[in-house]
Image: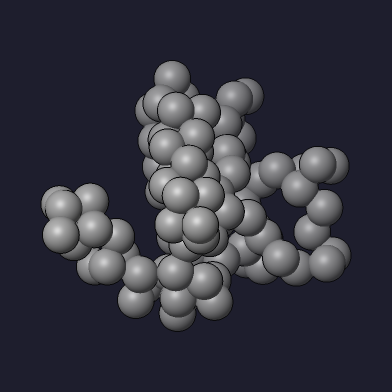
Length: 89
Ligand SMILES: [Zn+2]
């Protein structure tokens, strides 16, 4: 087992509880009144929250919403979603 396998397994329990999936899809999001994404979080599955219209993080959104320096947001989302795609194969 690799360090990534160990880390993924450690995160899986939290993610299963908060999102229903051990490998949820991630998205850029906003905390506060930032002008650019400054956080990442699992994609919200609430049908009343259309993320293409408002990508902010609300009470309907699954945890964790993780504050991230803006230059790292797209990179971390791509890494997590890439790991998700490999994990589902
Ligand atoms: Zn939401």
